[in-house]
Image (cartoon, rainbow, N blue to C red; front, top):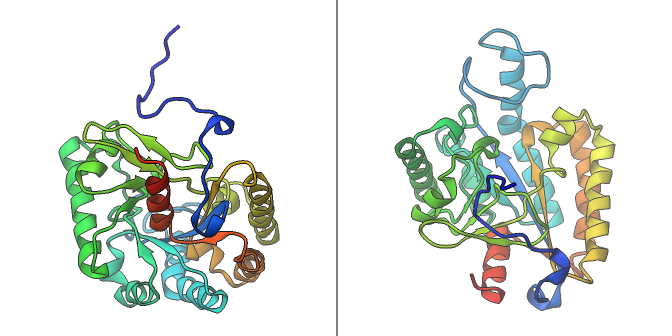
Length: 292
């Protein structure tokens, strides 16, 4: 029997790969992926904290907007206090909606990666021309606002077409966070050259954990800590990457923020033994040590 396959990468056991170190001999690389998202009012997709009502569904729209108005700013305060860098994953619409928030992340030196135009839409149903235009539009907005073009990409809802990796390379992207199949970066094939897949948090991610499985704030913080401690032990055998996915409208709620602070403080206290970096720095370090 021959199953359909994507053809993007071959199977590889993590125990059978060449060994290497991250900078300064570190074995575990950690990054924070902060998703900043803006949604259409009364239409399109969006995470839900309560029952969805007919449009305009004010409850869920306003809950998500809390993240940009309050939660994201509290998260910046926490990151500053803990001296933690971040990789920001903004919908490009954020530059029109909350330019001061985007400027605050730029000023603190955070990496800005691509995350589509808005999470009200998904690229999975787009034609090739529509998807290429969407990637180009969102990339141009970020390049103008951030002062440099983004190199990393996370699709809204992690949705793809069969051509998404090809189109990303053709748009100048060097790594993607869509494919969550490993604890190390993996080179992928595209019609226009290699694209690096960087591990992204799908389990350690507040949307599936808190919205999907109704995980409590303390339990989510424990998940972050336990995942970190286990990966730190495993990294003695293979160098690994730990990506933590956060959305300010979820973890920026005060009771969750307090628990998140506990978890991130635990990680920050290990900065002498792990490499806390931006996603793009991790991707580049891997590419330097393991060329495509």
